[in-house]
Length: 61
Image (cartoon, rainbow, N blue to C red):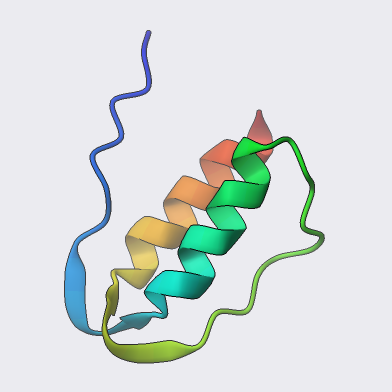
């Protein structure tokens, strides 16, 4: 079962893309960035529900 993640939808008001990308990069490197992230909400950000679900899956591994 491969990871078929295709990215997040962009929405009018979503999580700051740079912050999410940096957090996910740390997870990919095997670094535990600590507790649940607190991303800023920005215009044209990543869909919040999608990001939350993806992070929950990655942290459960």
